[in-house]
Length: 337
Image (tube, rainbow, N blue to C red; front, side, top):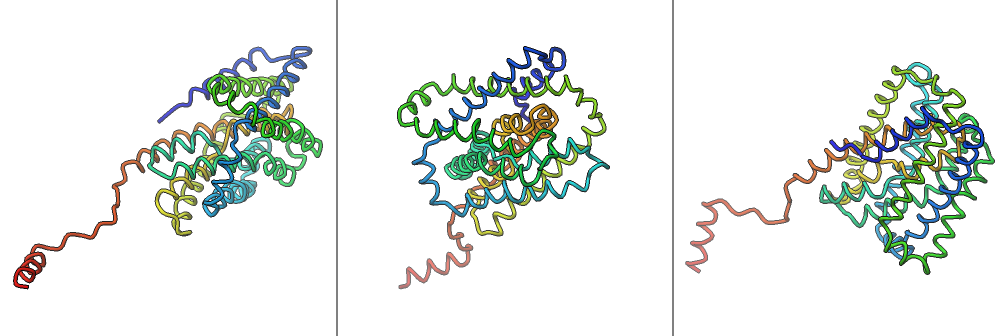
């Protein structure tokens, strides 16, 4: 049962924001730095994505369409259905965060890792995760505008403009410049990966600092958090079952079903946190809490499932050996002929 070390860093950042929140001038500096970090983060995303590989992956369009439907159709529908749990089990701010969680694109790295462990279709998982992340830059804000409205407290039509300027424009710039900087980005992948994670930590610190200053954390109790965990556990279980058995109903083979299950049931923390910072502003701390909890839960559960799938027996298409009596009769007939 893995515990993502990055989750520990995120929790440490939340603790730092609780003890030493940025105020006044420091808050302004942190906000500007966070905005720049988000733009740079999506610039790197654009520089890394190989357009040629993405186009080649379109050959397996049925699988990718299935994953996209799970990510941006089935997940949001389940999120909307959870509206009935307010206020009995969830508060409105926690529900808003839960609904936002269902709008976020799928993961790339962990989907690939778990698909590989389970002996699934790794190339399909790579393309499915890439397509989902690419589509999420446009689809997630549009879905948020349609489904969240002003319930995010600070989310408005202006947020779409900020999304375009902070996420889409840097991403497209990275794609345009990939021809010249793609090699550099590939060679320094590890260092730039640290920049990615550092940028997200800065976004989290800024969001939770604003939340602490405004006192919105007083809205959350231990009972409500427990209720949120139960709801997310059910959500994950439903999506894992739908992607696995739905893939079978659609006629996909075992390897493709594994890729569909791991890519179609997961949500990206790396993409969701920066988007929440842009969409929700000072209310981003409560909005990203469900995503942070779901991220850790999906890692733990999918790790167990991947290891169990890896132990599945191989099923080679070999004709069964005939019984002893039949084998003798056939052999006798051959000799007499």
